[in-house]
Length: 220
Figure 1 (tube, rainbow, N blue to C red):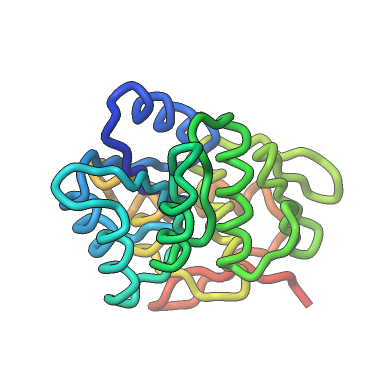
Figure 2: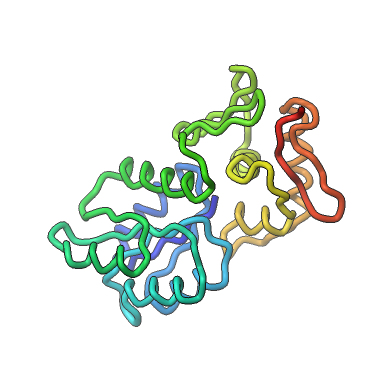
């Protein structure tokens, strides 16, 4: 899953980016409102961590522009501890949740997981598809209770398919959600990851929809 991190304070931005990457997310970073607006408007983002006090364009304006343009990705805003007015303004502008500074990284990650789950219509932190279970808290995938050994990219592909199970997902869509903006993207590598996953998963769990992409669905 791909996160847009918008934070202008260098030390905090670096800490957040490292924490998000360690949690298995692909991270794109913006340090001002203009870049943030452009990236959120043009890139395939699964969720946004948005500071409100940004140079060039403030976070509330960025958020309002995204929502006015129909961009519906979940947004978690970061506010000052006593900035209750910012929280209200953020929620009114279209934010899905807020977190007051300072905060623990574990809480930010938990709130992000919840936002991404809800955006995909999932109520639990454990996603299931037939015998396959993916625990989004521990990044652990199991089949009939047996743990799967997955590389980081295999996990990202599987996690995206699990969040969108039953839907046809194109190779291009997968590439956009498993690589950061500045990564040298090659859609052919997706076929490699899918082939590796199929060797580790029960037969027919990942379907190929000719000319369209892939679909994760529990075999009937």
